[in-house]
Amino acid sequence: MATLKVEPGPPAMLRVALQRFSEADLDQSILRQIGVQELREAVANGEIIEDYPEDEYGPSCLVLGFTRMGRPLHVQCSYPSRPLVKIITLYEPDSAEWIDFRVRRTCHEHVPMERTIGRAKSYIIEGCPGEYEERRIVHTVRYRGQVIVIDHVPAEVCSVCGDVLLKPETVRQIEALLRTRTQPVRVVPLYEYA
Picture 1 (cartoon, rainbow, N blue to C red):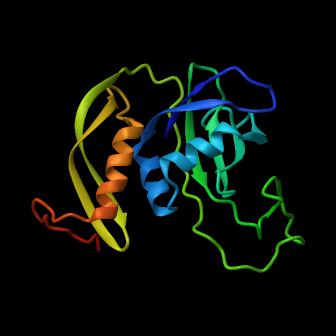
Picture 2 (spheres, one colour):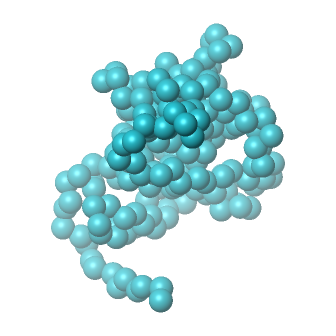
């Protein structure tokens, strides 16, 4: 999950500055074609539209924000109970499921439309006592129908639960690598679970 540093602001708004991404966030953002800058823009003007105080993995809320180009994004994140807030999931809301992207439609209000990619959910481990350590990891992502393995990615890894965080500049570099599609250093075997 991405972590966000809370800044002072109006109570109805969640003003944050992006600090770290988890591997799951990176995969979600690539699959959904949401760039780091778009996420920053949406969160910067975000508004809390739903509150989940009893979420089984810790209290969280759903934020709606718009990019400079007007693209709506939903970001579910943990409560700002610590200096860093973690993003649980991010996606572009489907207008067939949302009224003005702020209110969920009831089953009678659904608009027939082609559905977008469903939202994958990843959770944080609340109260983990671990400390993050600088490490190099192997990151695997499915991009445009291919499995791509990126070695020696700088990351911060929790010493207890193994949670992985990536800095925004690392995410931008991975995004650029995927766009340019340079020749791989080596090819690795891929096995299918049957």
